[in-house]
Length: 369
Ligand SMILES: NC(=O)c1ccc[n+]([C@@H]2O[C@H](COP(=O)([O-])OP(=O)(O)OC[C@H]3O[C@@H](n4cnc5c(N)ncnc54)[C@H](O)[C@@H]3O)[C@@H](O)[C@H]2O)c1
Image (tube, rainbow, N blue to C red; front, side, top):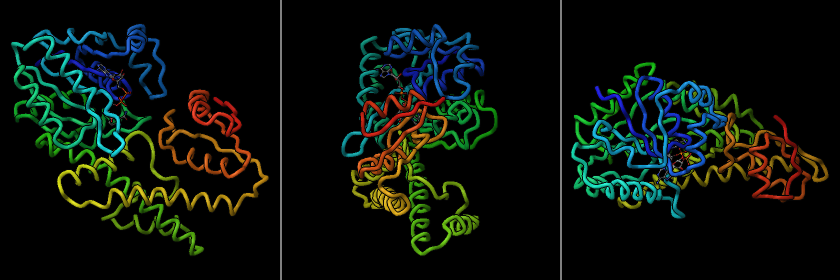
């Protein structure tokens, strides 16, 4: 069995995958364009809030990282995962220019004598892998899609114990190769969902849209129950007790945020529109998440006098993360401060420095460990 795997892009997702693969016995040849990051990985000085990442990195003896794509050229590296950013464009689709630029770099190295299999881990729009296959096929590359269902704060564990491994395979033989890699890496037996790359591209964003819809539904029903003077938790617990619905993602709290759920939800709406299919659910869910924030703000105003000093702690979009992107708690704190309240934010220095850069003197900042 092949024992060396390539990875391009060793950021939050790719480095965890690289470390899990290395831990399961593979030699991993990684490439990242950020030289400082590469140096920190090689010197094993990288810090990260991601549990287990630092210790796995310290223990890794078969992970070789550089900025040089040519390190992936040797014939014994046949599978190359691509985990580079795909930022959201203003209308909601994902920008694949980072993946395109990697493909151009690979093409510039010349046609390969032994077929190489690119496995896209980055989240992409339906149809992207099919387009990349057309571009790369001529240079003896295949393109498959293998997105991951992981959460910040538990990436390494989520990769070891996934519910499912989703494989959008170029061919059955390549799907078998990808499945064999996960069989070696996973510490339990997940479901293997194998399909075409386009079907897998739809599945990935549809799963996240389902979750956003469930969260938005729970918060909307909770808001309504509170407005009726009832107990939102009793109502949601009863709804979730129906086994067809279940309790997961059906709690009352802040709206969904972070770097994945909101953008995947929007992207599904755009993908449907491009296919000529009406899917108002995606926009309705987004709007509902915003209306929940309005409800929380009004409730806050009812319970706090304007001359009160108020404190918000743990501002990242979720625990064990330092990501503030689309954090609904931060959004509420911002509204409250903009309404004239004296707002203190308490968090670690990584989180506070990001907020300070965006909001400056709107808040008072208190660093805690
Ligand atoms: N982080 C997550 O929890 C998560 C979850 C699911 C899906 N994803 C998807 O995975 C992809 C990557 O996300 P991430 O959070 O790891 O991003 P990230 O920004 O943390 O890491 C991306 C890495 O790619 C590198 N890179 C960019 N262009 C490159 C190039 N041309 N050549 C080599 N390296 C390059 C960057 O330097 C960076 O280290 C995105 O599409 C994201 O939507 C991420």
